[in-house]
Image 1 (cartoon, helix red, strand yellow):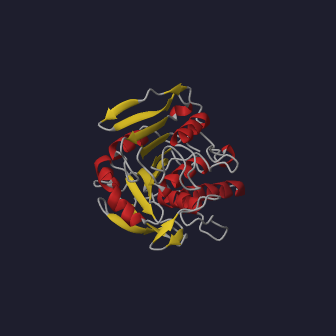
Image 2 (cartoon, rainbow, N blue to C red):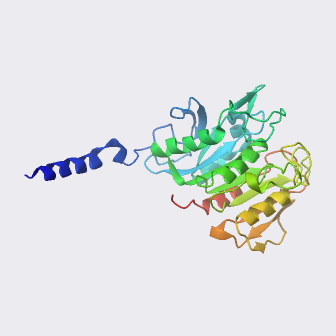
Length: 305
């Protein structure tokens, strides 16, 4: 046998038998139909993960990150949102992490340049929540648990603002976002806070958005105002996402259920529609219709990198 042939065969053997060349094995992070605490690789942090009832350990599933509000926890958010029950109906995984900045009995998300509910702007010493969440995607995909082309983010209030931020800065990792009483499209402009600052939201691709809100919310009012991290209206956020997504059609506002109306934009690039669902009389709470949220997500996947 010629020497070069032996070297060639050895290289082929490495390609075939190297662990890094193997497809991810069956998901083994927990039990189907149950919620478990999962350590995320080397991050030093854990998150609650609910595997849906009937989950096939050999088949990666879609994943929704459920992000708690300011001062909350992933555990409380999972219990109050009802999203685990929707996961059991529809077959997606829910991950409910804690944010990286501790306050009182809970946590707040690190959105650079934006003050938290404490009034403090996160600094360089605070945990990088974007890196943590995208690292969790990598880890769960490597474990054979999730389909990394079908990763989504939703969240309540501060968690909705964090989901919006992920749409701005991690569009290459998320297929769609669904902020609940928290839709943003970048930070408020410093000189004109009634407008979103275009420099702070530059997604790498069109980002489908469905947002849920209540028109009686006094914490994050859809009419704008409120705290320094809020300021501009929900309509301004929708319009900015429509610009970013290249939408060319304004949706007719229509009632879709008792006390719920829908607005937004269509004919967007890559099907990245922008939809707002507003509950008349709804306040600062989980006003999302979980089945409608999932239907929007289920119709969308991220193009392969």
